[in-house]
Image 1 (tube, one colour):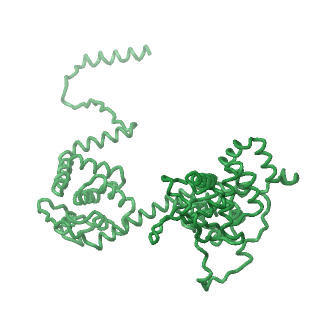
Image 2 (image 1 turned 180 degrees about the vertical axis):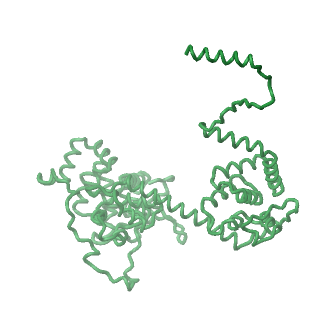
Image 3 (image 1 turned 135 degrees about the vertical axis):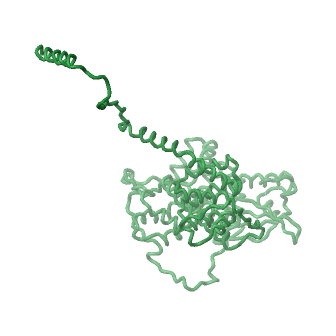
Length: 491
């Protein structure tokens, strides 16, 4: 109990107690053997006193009482020392999870009142799974006493079950909805469930999650191989909490959660929930949902841009005839040259793309120019000229090529329709003025890529033309023939 002033908690304040359980024989044993060594007999007596404010066979709220009654029944003097003693007992109960104290202000009476929310003690198995409570009890009574108490409260099973795995046993229990049928057509307002306990709404929402077991099992297919494993979630609160935590984390709907539990690999062969596998597949569901939502928003935004014209839209600009671009062949029957250039100058690039594609515009093309519009911040008229350039020159529509052109235009500060047209014309004129260089480059490329196709060197040939060259006399001719005969004889 957090108090900043000693007069904030006195015997004159009124109080009310709420509990939704009743202490039984096991609870009394747990209070005596487990809780009393940790918090003391005074705090346990205060807990029992608050519990008796309602009859043992009733749950809910008690009547308004003045805290002087608690002081007198606890034999505590209503003084500053007694108030600290009562607050100390309440703080001990709050620390071990047996009590929640809330202070409320009632404006009509101009007073502060106290609401005591009693919580049930943990059962032995649940208590010994709680590490900090077990360590605290060990510090109070010692390790040997702790083991003795645990063996006394938690009785071991027969030896025949020691070597068996109960998780693999066949569950022959009958679920509720297979044995009973409810008439859900008529609603009974008088049979509405009571409101949840104050102070427990947040805890219940965290422990039980968004979806209850009944919600999951009603929508889960009966012929599924994972049906027996899902039915076990009713008795496995930790696994059900993990399922709901993953559903909240990745914003899964109830049908998606049931579909995820029905997939292969979510449960082991023994029926245990594989949290990591479920989380990995839930992340895939989440990414698909986010992608679909983004696509939906993008489509809705485009539709709104078409249907609702902007109020503060910029005035339409005219195009000088000196900067007219030729109409592509596919659009010559639909618009004139002035209409075509007016469209390039004033229309968004999405409409221009629809003109150039007879059917639906491919999704990757829309994504590429949407990225150019958002990342490079090019003007719409410049993007339209770029689309005209790609279409008329029959260039590639892949992303790296368009990115390179957009980056080049951005670096050259092409930010208007006139600059874009001038740049295109300069490139075209530069390409036409150097046909020989282009031919040399093409032949060089053929030579480069086809290494075996090298040109052979030209061999000069000697052609004999009559009437030209020195004449040979008969004597010289006879001498030459004689030398030829001598060489033949030697060979």
